[in-house]
Image (cartoon, rainbow, N blue to C red; front, top):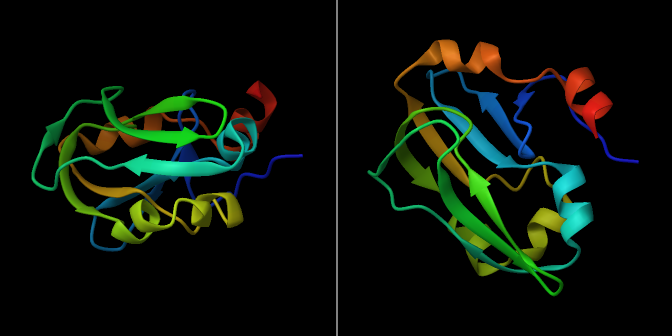
Length: 125
């Protein structure tokens, strides 16, 4: 059974978005996504400084079974990436909610309100 912490919101494409105290949004893939993909072997992260639109493909996670696109849950600028998961993708399998992929400085904070609550995300999956 997948889990989904209540301290963040979720996209229908299986990304989580966690608001930080400084106004940025930390993004990763959900527990459901990593369970579905299986053992992750490769992560391609976006370029720091790139501007993205909500629902734009910005990263890729690859498992022994398949590759899957990762989409930006919100519009904004990529301000950081987690090189530790690029070097050790299995960290996502170990704890999908600790192994973040990238951080966004949102350009439209209202987009966060359009994301799914934990309960709504779990009910949809």
